[in-house]
Amino acid sequence: MKPSFATTLALLTTGITALPATLTPRQTIFPKISISVINDLTGASAVATVVADGTVFPILTLFGGSRIDIDGIVTASSAQLIAFVDNVFCSFNKDDLIIPINGKNFVFADLDGNKEVAAPINLNAFTFQCQV
Image (cartoon, rainbow, N blue to C red; front, side, top):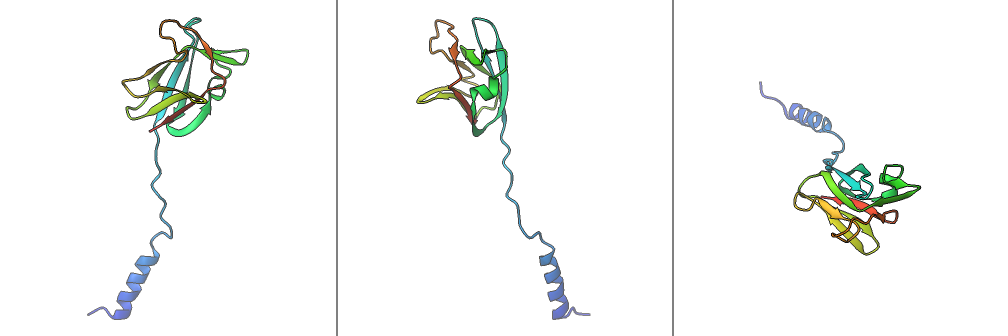
């Protein structure tokens, strides 16, 4: 028995209507990055983990209330990536100042700008950002 045109049309129509009405785009999964910020004079440090999606995080949001927060002032002299992926770019930012820290070749940052002396600085006006 040959299928009739009406039967074929009915089967095709049923198959088409069974498809989802809308297709959702593939969700991008961003890596998580962990950064340790250190006050090299006191030995105090704190760790924060962020998603490398380009979000800008105020330093007080990440480290306020931690061991490097002294009376509401976050002070540190260096930072180190402790969990990262190679193609990530992270930075501490304040106005036009950008202190980069990224990937396997550049996992350490001297925040005070003087490699000869560990001089903790006030980081309250800084932000931290990572992106792939």
